Image 1 (cartoon, rainbow, N blue to C red):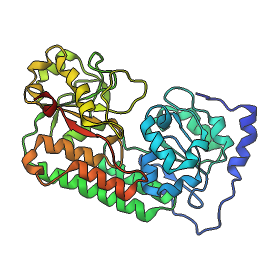
Image 2 (cartoon, helix red, strand yellow):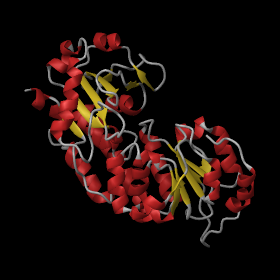
Image 3 (cartoon, rainbow, N blue to C red):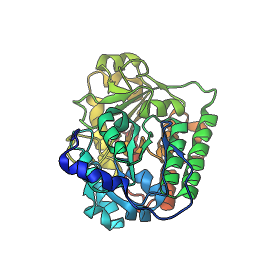
Image 4 (cartoon, helix red, strand yellow):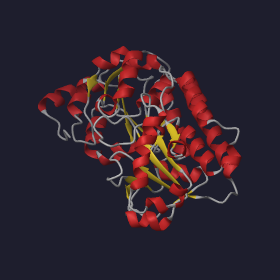
Length: 371
């Protein structure tokens, strides 16, 4: 990561401070997802995005991209190419936006961000905290930074981030509708599973195929989601930090009754479980089937009962992740969710809030393929 301010960047700093904005009534201070106060003179007109592109689109609509001047292009174009293909057709100006680089792989450039003269940088909480020096440099240049935290899978943080982003881009009504939807759907799941015995469940990132032990989750993302859905996360307290691989023998000893693996359209992940817009159910199930051949897995209660599932990785840390929680809860407690169709929920969400239609396979069970 470009962690220093070059001579060129130093010349750019005053431009960031002097960025003109439309004359509007003064905005109230905004509290972001991690409790920081963000002050804007008006809804942002020159926005740089570090992540959460689908959430930005849901809140602001496709037209909100007219005010985006830069983003982390790799997150879409390289990591999720089927998504990129669809969104660049729906929002053609994506292809011409400046790439700011990626914090995770060290290519993020503070100089590039400042050269765009933004009046708002949107990042995830993890990146804000892990790249403190770069964030301080950007804030010192007069660029407000808004932190989102959908990774925690904490309803309060989801709602806070949604409302904060809506306020920052002048999309308050749409943000409130999405926040209310999220709150209501999660509360409905919690009501339905209340008082029920939580089945043992195990989640794993299926990016490397059966031969690679992927991350599982503890108190965040899929780990928090399975608990909200009325399950007992077998990785809770068994791994260091919010995500890490769990020892194979520990998984076998935990004897999960349900196993969920996250898949995606990762371009370079050989053997990964395939899910998403371009994937049919047969392909997803074929990739799932390989996991039943792992040493000892044939004896797991989950595998014996056919309770092996794939969910798209994009269903976590997102405004639509309540649809994944519905799916997990429906598998764990089918009688309590007999009237709920999670796939239809995701289809309707696309129709209401997204510029691309629902297609493909995002949630699937192995059992039909193994019969």
